[in-house]
Length: 88
Image (cartoon, rainbow, N blue to C red; front, side, top):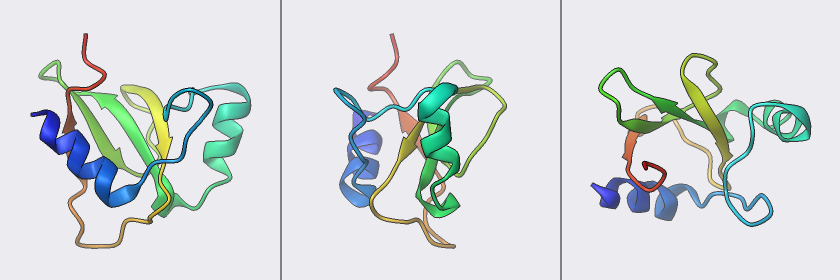
């Protein structure tokens, strides 16, 4: 299932945040995320099934990290990608 993460990465071209692409859910990272247009924000969430997913937009529930994309999503785009890169 790693191909879903790579599909997302190729399409949306995430912005680097230091050594990684993940932005924290607090502090300066959160400020940077909330100041970005919603169409560039992706939230890494833990699903009820124990998997992690990248989903469009800014979300609070079950959030783990945020990601900012260089390419905005548009209505009709796939809105959720299974993520296995960050799973333990």
